[in-house]
Image 1 (spheres, rainbow, N blue to C red):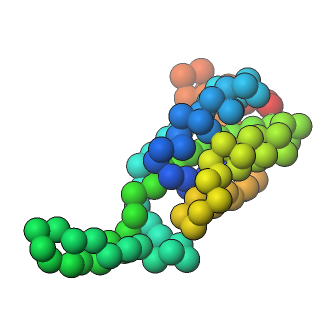
Image 2 (image 1 turned 90 degrees about the horizontal axis):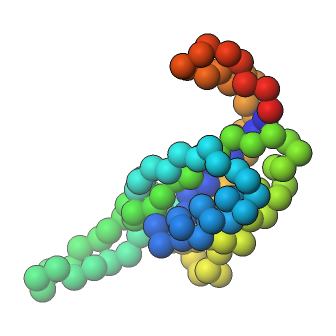
Amino acid sequence: MKLIKSIIRPNKVDEVKDALARLNISGITISEVRGHGKQKGHTAIYRGKEYDVSLLPKMEIEVVVPESVLEDAIKAIIEAARTGEIGDGRLFVLPVEQAYRIRTGERDVM
């Protein structure tokens, strides 16, 4: 099993969610996060004063998938989240050694 963590633009969440649903991937966690990468934020003007916005709003999507669908899930997320502009986000793949259902205590086998 692998954990895919992707940091994307907030307006792309529904597209990514739909792309994963088409692959029958249902277990998904979505969190609001803030940060920056190479774009390092931007300058904004509020009531005539200029200020730096260095931590931009992003969304983090986490999904655990079996290795058999890993490449398809990565491709689906990247294609759904891409705009081609700076700030599209990042995707990370991490190993998952074990998973358990809290309700029953049984070990998940994917």
